[in-house]
Image (cartoon, rainbow over all chains, first blue to last red; front, side, top):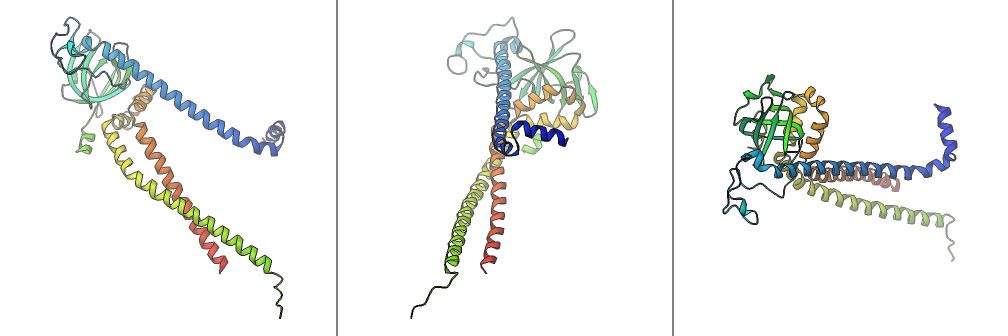
Length: 186
Length: 126
């Protein structure tokens, strides 16, 4: 080990020159960390934007149904008023949603195919999210494993998953949450 | 009649000037770090409240609680868990509160160091 260190010092021009290199190396390391953090932020932002776009584009299909068209008539607010009255209100067009996880209350259950179940949950900002449960989804309540049919309307759940291009979250883990954090707020 | 100056007068004068200069520097730094301590502690209170409110409003606490309840499942889905935690974390509040906390701790450490050096300086004078 000592031999290798002395080789490094010789290559860099001796111990005196090594002292001058410490500051630039430190600055480069800080810049590399900042660049990595920035890249991480861009990646997370893109994921949120992609999911939010899919959520808005597929809003009617996910929450109202493909066959029903938006009714004409006065709606809530401004330039989107031609969409008419919606069961869950006008979708927020200026928000970005978390794409890989959500915590909220189940407001609707249903099944789209034989192998998948969809849930609609209302998150803390009263925005509806579509959760897709398939054969790989792990559902837990306390220490028990549950099936999708065991989930009831009104239950509070925490979901971890991956977004699809239809603005849905394909759940990988669902935990039926206790009211711990509600008690904290109260 | 003439009183010649003592041979060490020059050294004593220079030593006195140096001591006064050091004392002035210590006082200036004491003032600077005291101000920084008061400012950072004053800012920490509203920032801490803001951080608490943001954490409750976001899903971060619920998602991070999964680490304790479903550790194996979280590890099996680590990329999705990490992304969901990053997406839900109120990063701006955390960063601001963290920065001011670091400032508070740094100012406190510097002030303690300066009080110790001031104490030593006074003892040297005596």
